[in-house]
Length: 343
Image (cartoon, rainbow, N blue to C red; front, top):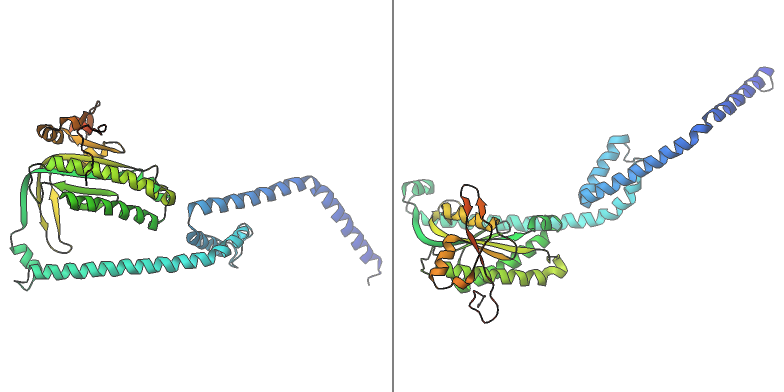
């Protein structure tokens, strides 16, 4: 049958159709090649974008999910060029996950330890009654007014951007190093550390221990912190790239209501407009400077330290306060009367 005239005619017709089809499609070949190049470029660019947006362990999960979605076989012509990179990162990702799990375990153990200590302290404080909650509600709160205080807020400028470019270990290395140094200075100068909130360090004088020279002491403490922060940023810069960071400090003086908030995680805390104003003085300051409210400046001048003050030329606009006249703590030249750190 292969030698019949009909079979030969079919073969000839098939060959003619193939030739005609090839001639017809020939003009479109460059466009097809361009399309393939564009598809490859798009896939490569997409991989680079994903690499910049996500850490390796997240990127691997995204790529694997996309492969499964496209063909259900675990492979994709668009994303296959990233397979080698994913495989190279797989082992390091596993190590990171193991390290992350270990760190989280330590954090959880620390929190459980703190919670247990807090519970024991709470029960001990209210051991006169069987129900701790009733004991707190039925007893008089531990609180009082402190009319003569100074409050300091110290914040790391450019910290948010810096932290976004560094690992959690590096972020906490910076914060622990800085706050440790501040704590040492506070203990030497008799300054009370209220708390830290993120990268903000909050301290006070005149509360909980009343003192007449609260504004002077806290101003000297602020200058010590400013100098120490600058030294630390230089020291840590080779490893953490902290050269662009600065410390921004604000101080305000006035009355506060302070007391112990009992219950779970009981703590000593302050309330009042003085706290809010101190925060506004800090936020409207500038890096590597100590910003003082007019109330604090007045106390400094009354103490005979007017040379420490440099009036701010522009008025500060604070929400709910209007325009505020403020001062900079002047860093004096050598041999001049200045608040330089002496601890």
